[in-house]
Length: 104
Image 1 (cartoon, rainbow, N blue to C red):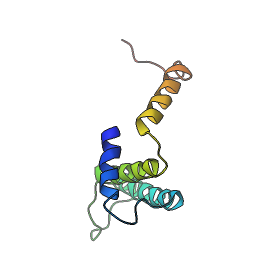
Image 2 (spheres, rainbow, N blue to C red; image 1 turned 90 degrees about the vertical axis):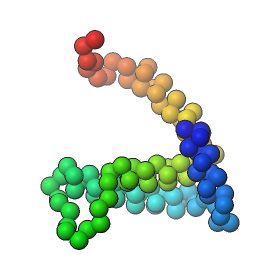
Image 3 (cartoon, rainbow, N blue to C red; image 1 turned 45 degrees about the horizontal axis):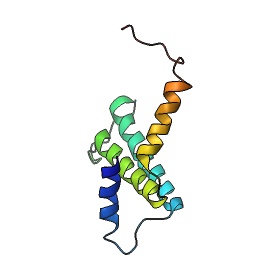
Image 4 (cartoon, helix red, strand yellow; image 1 turned 30 degrees about the vertical axis):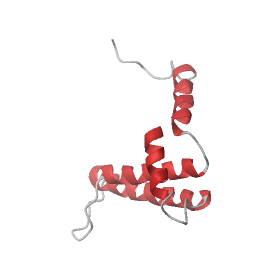
C-alpha cells in the first residue's frame, strides 16, 4: 500500500495544483462510486447498457475509486496501510465470532 501511495504522490507532485481539497476529493469519490454502481447494475442488475453507451468495466471503476481514495489519504497524510491494519485488528477481535465460519 505504501508503494501505491508513493506512486500516486509522485504523479500528483508533477503538477502545481497538487491534491484537490478534502471536500473536492470527497465529491470525486462520490462520483466514482456512482460510476462503479452503474457498472455493477449493468452487469448484475436489471438495467442493461444502452447500445451507444461506452463500455467500461467494474475493474476500471474500482481502479478509479482506489486512485481517488489514495489521493484523499495522501492529502491528509493518512497511512492507508496503518488504517487497514487497525480495521483488520477490529474485525479479528470485536467481530471474530460475528459470522458463521466455514468448516475446516
